Image (cartoon, rainbow, N blue to C red; front, top):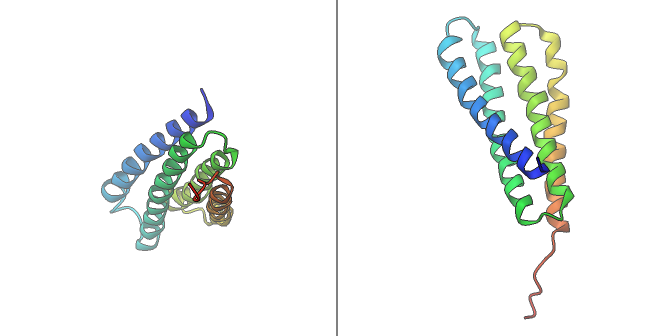
Length: 132
């Protein structure tokens, strides 16, 4: 499987999971989590949803510019950031193990690196000659 195709698959899987986990949190967990842990869980869902869309957009852009390895790298950083950031918050909310919160900043940093990599990639994309 090619890198863009694998990225698209991972984005689709993450999109599926964000809907499933969001529904699970809203219905099955609503009565069992404290308000603080509900907010933590909701933050995980929101960030996963937002960054899944970003990773999807990056991947689609990489299909248009297949020579840009930087776009592919940005997409992978977004997905890794989702796993670390949202994943640690999901686990924290479900288990109450506060030490899991130490992983969350690394996920946030990875998401920031993904956005920075996207900006770098865009600057390196071939431009059209405006004099024609």
